Amino acid sequence: MYRNGRVMQARTCAGALALATLPMWIGACLAQEASAASTSNTVDPVLREKIEAQGRRIDAMRSKMAEQLAELEQMKRELASQEVQYNDLRKAIGMNALEEARGGSAAVAGAQSAPPQEDPTPGTPAPGAPPGQTSQPVVATRPVGKRPEQDDRPPEVAPIFDQPGVLTPRGKLIIEPSYQYGYSSSDRVALVGYTVIPAILIGLIDVRQVKTTTQTGAVAFRYGLTNRMELEVRIPYVSNHTDTISREIFTGTAQDNLFTTSGKGIGDIEATLRYQLNDGGADKPYYVGWFRAKSRTGRDPFEVTSDCVTRCLENFTGTGLPLQSPTGTGFYSAQAGVTWLYPSDPVVFFGNLSYLHNFERKNVSRNVVLAGKQFLGDIKAGDIADISLGMGLSLNEKASISIGYDQAFVGRTQQNGDPLPGSARATLGSLLIGGSYRFNEKETLNVTLGVGVTRDTPDTTITVRVPITL
Image (cartoon, rainbow, N blue to C red):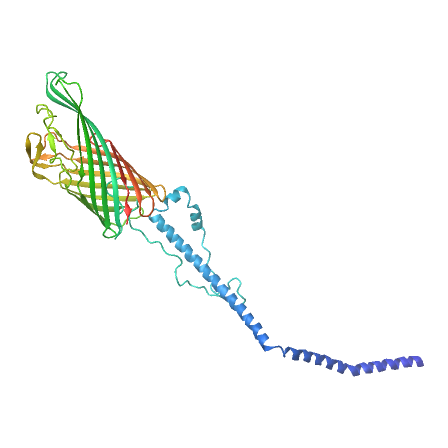
């Protein structure tokens, strides 16, 4: 029991000691926490400022990135709108007709058919923005790209007629050297006499084959007075060569006779004024009115000397052949007309309608070998009404082809107010095929082939033109 009492006493002392040291332990813990707090309060203020500044820069960069993302979305919408307007303008002037025909614009069409992205709701945080910060949509202060200028000029096609459809821009000068080769042949049988019965002829038979080659080199100058008006001056140089093969039957000869004439020199200089009457467009025609005046600077048929000694047979057959070929018509002329173009993807239809008036010449005479001057009186060549139609197709941005038909109606020649005996109305018809190739923005090659479809029209005509823009 004594022993147990000591144990109990020891335990009592240990509890009392623990209770006595408990306040001291609590105080030590509190002192340690106070020491830690005082240590944190002693951190370098410069370092604290750097940390806080870095945090502010990160927040600013996040905000700026959000604004730039919003601006990028706005620029995408502006670009999509510009592309739609650009493609509409290309379609309006027929530039993308060939691309659509080849299927080359499928990717563009797919891009246009894709629905535009929805605009972000104002006030919604942009991706990557810190919580609690919102970005407002930024409106672009300047347009993205440049809107293509709308061209109100007619589309270019390979020219096959004398009158072009596209006028020269204002202040521009175009020099167009050209060369034309024409060949024609005709057979003529002249009967001079009378018939007892339809199978027997008493008199002369004159059989002729006439082969004519004409070469014309010309230089045309076109200047744009305004964007809708141009002036053209054309100076030709003509070289003619004619072979006449004939045989007179019942005159004691059985061989062909050849009579050759030729002539070269300046032709008839002409001036043309053209004006675009309206603003066309897709599925809308263009109209270009024009007026041409022609001089008679070339050697006319009345100035050359006719041989009625070698060729005329007792003045029964014909009136003789000229010793030189003329280089001009011999009449002042005025011609008015209108050219129209109608774009319809993928082709362009075009045509001309004109009327040419030849002015009458007074007191005309001609020179005859061994007979001097022969008075003819007042002579007026027949007027000419012309109509032409064609269509052009652009193969690519440089090459194009055209095909058309031209028909002219020539009236009778008058002498002293009455129709000249032996003259008749004539119809000239030509089938025209042309091609054009553009070397660059200033030089283009145009080639035209004409085939006569009536007896009075030259069999073949080839024209080469090279317009050069200065």
